[in-house]
Length: 289
Ligand code: C2E
Ligand code: MG
Ligand code: MG
Ligand code: MG
Image (cartoon, rainbow, N blue to C red; front, side):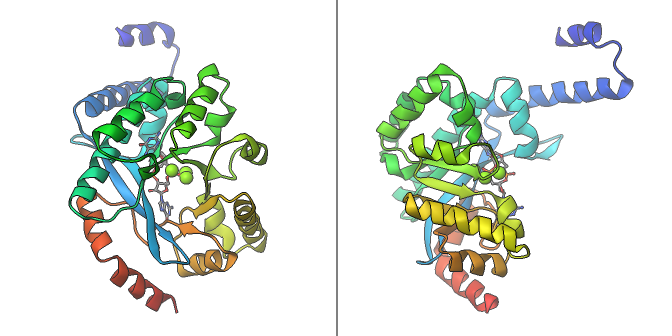
């Protein structure tokens, strides 16, 4: 049916645009099937406390491998999920999967302090979100600080009337909120005053250039000072080399994640990584000097 509608409305489109729309429709269908068919997976990226050399937590990142289409990146499927109304479901799935995984690790003595889950603005339109999370925590015997919910500034600029209420309720439950991609949106500073966030995630675009551009490193330093004075944990994203690592450490950044430490990994791989963690870090510190 959708096809017929498309044909009617978009008949003046070029061949190319038609095939793009068709590919898009196919991807949408595959996404829906994958989500309901359990074909999504979470990968986990370690977050390192820079001064202490300890594991702060892991960030859960959705992965989708399709038998025909291969690996499809979040950069491609997240916007589609947003547009076709599946992003709410994806976020809830990720929350449940993360809780399940953390409980499983705890039961088997694998020490992961907490899991950060990415949520979309749409998840905060859902007034049942706080209750949903409470249910998960109870079911998996977890406490609120076992989770962190990552939100972007789009959540804060959202005019949906439920958003403020949901954020307040999640905060009241004691679940930490992190501001993802900090520095890339609008009015970041104004929102920091009103928002119950406990973590600032310094966007990877700043980290990428900080070691080669003094103006950028002045900005990262400023963000770290803001975090310090507001008592927020600053997490640097996308740390790829020793120069960035050293600079962040010298600026007093609390936590970092990035390929320099590890790529996001499947659960079993992360377990092995956690077991080797100390040896791992020592080796990297050795390479860095
Ligand atoms: P994000 O939350 O800012 O996640 C960080 C992204 O940076 C991840 O990309 C991660 O794999 C990548 N990354 C980590 N270290 C490095 C590094 O050293 N260098 C570079 N260049 N990249 C690094 P990924 O997994 O492709 O995810 C992209 C975005 O998709 C995420 O950005 C997040 O906004 C969104 N996303 C991923 N999973 C979910 C999910 O379950 N729900 C929602 N709503 N969004 C998700
Ligand atoms: Mg994130
Ligand atoms: Mg980010
Ligand atoms: Mg990002």
